[in-house]
Length: 292
Image (cartoon, rainbow, N blue to C red):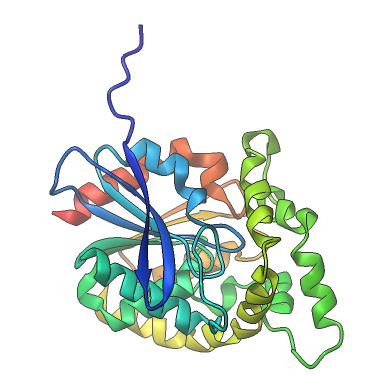
């Protein structure tokens, strides 16, 4: 008989931050002094993309995963300004509200622009960096990413491009493109993403964020300078067949962080969905080494 000893207990909570009702999920580890990992999700997902990772590691580490405004179960007031600066503002206040003064930062997709803003504002918070297809380099942008992330709001074709991207077909494609065996991907992910994306005002929020993405590309140089100055311990885990953030973006981290640990996986954008058995031990080992 198999004895199961380390399945995480997970709490699902809301906290009010600057008028935003932020939803988050948090593991409840056995030790009060467990290392803390802040998980920042991507587009068009939410904290639910980390459910399996939290189940696997949450008994031994404190994993905290919020939903940004415009995503998941988080509720933003009417008139909220959707920009990456504002997402970072809310995430910063969320971290302060929870009293997290030191953590390893996990960034994926949109989590990179949110997380790097956070790191610039509070370098003392960052015990280490895990980037999983979280881009910070020009060479990491595929042609498809450049065309989608640098849309001109004055171009009549822009709304058509975004309308196609926000469909179930577009959402599912983000999960399956570049994946060798799509049977490893649960349809729950893209189905839940689309459920939230189809909610009132959500497509307008996502449109605003796409049109603001140029501010992230313009910030790449500052983020790279931050990496060189602060040299955080870093783990780079990358789905090398990501249609948006290509392998060159993973390798570029080594230019600024020569001691970073790099792992390239034969999968696409949502690497946790297909390669959790490979990625989870890497994260656990990194947390153990970094936290001490």
